[in-house]
Structures are given as structure tokens and as C-alpha cells.
Length: 318
Image 1: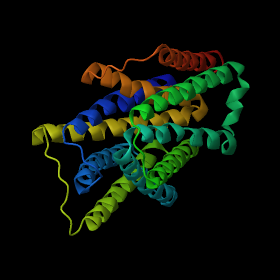
Image 2 (image 1 turned 60 degrees about the vertical axis):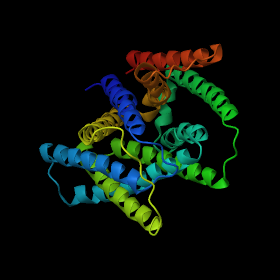
Image 3 (image 1 turned 30 degrees about the vertical axis):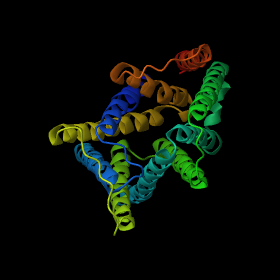
């Protein structure tokens, strides 16, 4: 499967379908002020689905598991556990300030790009002047839109935040950025997609289980904050299954694209989709028509033109 198809698949699965599913699940319950055992049980249910998908994928891949494969799987498993902690950190940050937490999610993309360029030697992709210009235009558009959007959100949310928020946000940014880089590094090595995905989701399931136990311990002796579901149990189960399947598909497309091309080539597409995808889902499915000023449309246009230039550069110099 060619890399443009993988990029498109990742955007559809991760930025459109998953955004819709998680937004719907988020609306199915009354908001909770902090992540609780209620939150973590829902996360664990989705992690069980992705773990099962990973196991089935590995079983039917025909991959023979020897000592070398098990040695490769151990660090991936451990990083998967760290990935679960990153999820909890962003939940804590968003519980304090949803608008400000967006900044850390955007900034986390800088880490894998920088590390991949320097440590994996992917900077050589910039020898193509066309790719470099497209990457630079996309980066400029994302940066300007980021400043424009965060400034508008903070103006609406003038309340102060505790210093612990910046600790949660920074820890999440480092966790997400470093795990993305390691994923790219494993994709460029001899690690196969079935082995990576199964080991990764085994780690996230274990990490999610540990977090659930810790949250329960922290809440011991306290009245647990519960949220009544606005959906029927059967509908909520279907949404959780859809969440697990979309997350699994997102990971497969993402890892497979890293196997084929440098991260620096696909990063402009993914960073732009991270902004545009949830925005489109909110507009067309939830009636959240966000009115952009002329500068917002200009910055979006820069992102889209930049990604088109990157794609053109790979067509002319594959």
C-alpha cells in the first residue's frame, strides 16, 4: 500500500472517525471535574478492544515469534505503559483548562520531528527544496493558527490556572513527543507492524489497569464522582467498540506510513489533520460552527498549500 493511501487512511480513522466517536462518548456523560475511576473504566474498555485487535492481527500475520522478537517487544511494551500515563496526564490538564491544554498537544509534534531529523538522519529529506518549502509553509501556517487560536481561547477563559496544570501539560507533551519519535524509530528498524502493535497495546492495557488501581486508591474513603450515561448501555458499548477499532486502525496506518517514508514527509499532513479533522467533525456532526476571521482562513490555506507542495515533491522525487 503506497504511503499517500496510508496517510489518507490514518486521517480518516484517527482524525475523523475517532474524533466523532470520542466526541460522541464525551457528550454521552455529564462532565466530570477530574478523571475518576469512572473515566478510567471507560478507557480500559477501549484498551481491551485495541489489545484484542492487536492479538488477532499478530495471530493471523503468520509471524513466527522467536527470542529476538520477544526482545524487541519488551521495550515497546514498556513504552506502551508510558503512553497510558500520557493519556491520564492530558485528561488531568484538560480538566483544569481545556483551552490552554491545546497548546501542549500542538507543541508535542515538535519533539518527534526534531529528534527524527537529528538522530535518525531524516533531515536529508530536506535536500529537496520543494519538500523543504512545503514543510516550512505548513509549519508557518500551523504556528500562526496556533497563536491565533490559543489567544482567542485564552481571551474567553480569563481564569487563572494552578501551576500544577503546567506540570501536567509539560509531562504530557514530553510523553507524547518521545513516544511518537520511538514509534518512528521502531518503524525504521526491523520491527514488524504486527509485533509492534500487539506489544504496544499490551503495554497500554497494563498501563491503563495500573492507573485504574491508582485512581481507585486515591479515591478510597471518598465519594466517587459518577456520571449518568445519557445513552443506553448497548449504544455505549457499540461506541466503545467503535473507539477501539478506530484507534487500532489509526495506529496501523500511522506505523505503516512511518515504515515507508520519513516522518518529516508525513508530519505536515498529520499536524494539519489534527487541527482540521476535529474542527470539521464539530461543524458537520455537532453543529459547532466555528466562525473564523480572515486570518484564520489564511492560516488554514497556508497549511493546505504546504501539504500539497510536500505531496508534489514526493511525486516528482519519490
